[in-house]
Length: 203
Image (cartoon, rainbow, N blue to C red; front, side, top):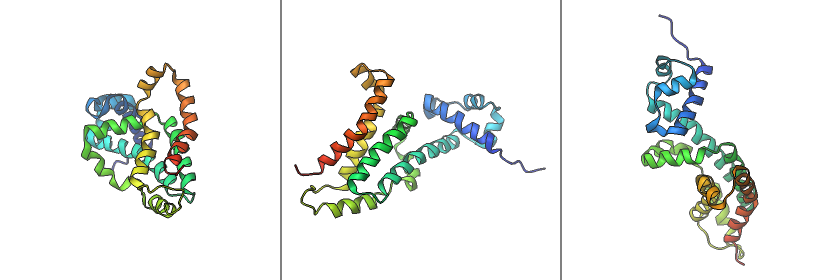
């Protein structure tokens, strides 16, 4: 019997279809038949590529989570100064999420559904060593407050992530449409960076 070879184009269509279905219905609500239909293949072929919904979900989650952590690591581990790093992180992150608006909610939704699930992806977590070393080098400067990397990273991530997680709520409260929201996010690239930088400086 000849060995079957997986077609990369078919596998790509499956991942695109699965991403669409998982994003709209989550892990629990998604059905393999629906994913197969979206990909334009039959269910038997889908199971040939991915034996279970869990396996397919993990493939999609890995792809999406990797996209995000690559951006985080790139911003945190380049050779720029601490202030430049904060500005670049904010600008690059907001631009990245504007191109992938579904990503924050998708990741948070699945982490809340199964908190231990994220531990499988520990190898993808951002590396904070260089960022921490830079902060520790700068703190002795009289103009910088004593600030742990954990506190600073929480502030950086929170101020950048929350508006995208709460987008429907913010649009309703502020009475703005999608175009207005995108303009607001564009303005926040500089504003959030300055808030964070000023928070670690003495007046």
